[in-house]
Amino acid sequence: MQALGIDIGGSGIKGAPVDVHKGKLLAKRVRIATPNPPTAKKVTQAVNEIVQYFNWESKIGVGFPGIVRDGHILTAANMHESWVHVNAEQLFTQRTQCACTLINDADAAGLAEMHHGAGKGHKGKVILLTFGTGIGSALFLDGKLVSNTEFGHLQLRGKIAEARASDRARSEEKLSWKSWGKRVAEYLAHLELLFSPDLFIIGGGASKNFDLFKKSLKRIHAEIVPALHGNSAGIVGAAMAASGA
Ligand code: BGC
Image (cartoon, rainbow, N blue to C red; front, top):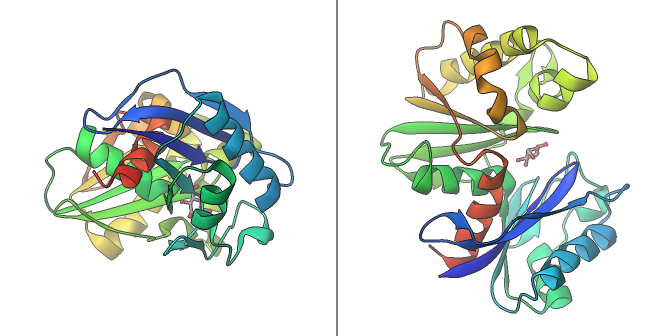
């Protein structure tokens, strides 16, 4: 079964057709820079461009960086306020003429990693975190997704965690991998205190550099592994959500 997966991010909108049973991209992914400002109108246009690029005519899954409930967007911290309360599932379906399923971007990445990646076969509590423009989170209990957890918005030293420990914070503050890693460790320790997960999966743009900061992740009891699908997890998982796989 195939579906087109699209991942809307703070800096890029990426998409590719996916074999949802194998969890593999069927073509090289396409990336469009996220419009500035990322209004509902402009982003919808970019989503449609990706659909047109692949001449896609069947199901599409779209990952969005905000709380998603019943196809509606409830928050859009790193996007534009024009998204809030929008029925984006309906908007994308109408614009692209392809049946759309909407899911939180980190939940999508989590689905991909739990079924086809670093979390495959893991029971117990697993937390996947995506470190990019923000921090996304996906919580799994015995393989089942608990959606819209938004752990990136927990407070850390009086600041929202993603403002302190996202990959954007690392590059904007020109932090070394070591000092950024210490911030991530502090964040993981906080999550560990609250949830005692068995496994953390580190995803998002930073996952490919896991070896550069893993030594800083000290005093965490849970196992910590990098995501296997890197930045493509969001595309694969969005397509999985669309197919119901
Ligand atoms: C959003 C989350 C999203 C994360 C990563 C946060 O700012 O609130 O919904 O998963 O960024 O994109």
